[in-house]
Amino acid sequence: MVLDRVTDELISIFEDAMRVAVLTGAGISAESGVPTFRGGGGTDVWTWRGKHITELSSAELMATDPALVWEWFDYRRGMLKSVAPNAGHYALADWEKRFSPFTLITQNIDDLHRAAGSQNVLELHGNIWKARCLRCASVFDARESPLEKNPPTCMVCGAAARPDVVLFGELLPETVFERADKAAHQCDLFFVIGTSAVVYPAAGLPISAKQCGAKIIEVNPELTDISMMADYTILGKAGEVLPRFLRNRA
Ligand code: APR
Image (cartoon, rainbow, N blue to C red):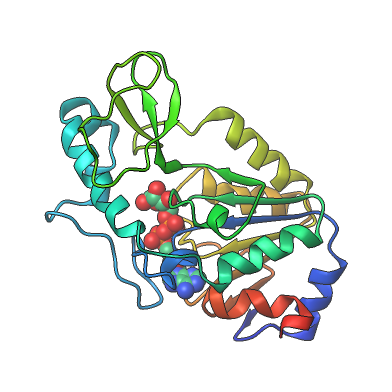
């Protein structure tokens, strides 16, 4: 069912839910001024030096030109430094206080869910403010932007480090995905928010949840590949729609 607002029926489903899981994508950060990857909802798309993200954020380029990959991520870090969470991020932080278990699974590397106060965040694609050593695999905070040194070096062994994000051509961190998959299998209500749902294995999570009997609610200004199998699709912006689920905030 495609809707243009949060109905009383949806609020009842929300209030009756016991185990909730949420998958977010770039769209939830759009109202904070962060571009998306494939557009939709009138959003800007990430562009840099005329290169496509699948090339820039690739394991292949990391192997051949790591300094360029760092420049690309530092460009994004520079932009992200000045953005703040929006009402959509804050609504999910509120939901976390209401439900237990509540699992927030994000494809975003922008750290805005945490900045909004969310605690239990599964970052499927990593975090742009972290770096990982190429020798000892230590993960450390690398928040300075612009980068003082390219590449940044490991705080433990001094070797070169890479962005602690999942690049195209790489597998997701196993433990994080296992926890996300478990939450999808065990929830009774699964939200899909601000994602075009074309990148796997993340886009498979709502399908798993549906197969296990969960209700699927999608929030996106546009229909996506998931809309066909979602029980409800609310055509709207996350920052406007999500706060409406908590009745006393309508
Ligand atoms: N609220 C909710 N959804 C929105 C909003 C908004 N305000 N504005 C846009 N959207 C929707 C768009 O309609 C689109 O469907 O957000 C979606 C963004 O899709 P993508 O740009 O494809 O981003 P995402 O699905 O997160 O991409 C998945 O692909 O490039 C890789 O690693 C990258 O994590 C990313 C993954």
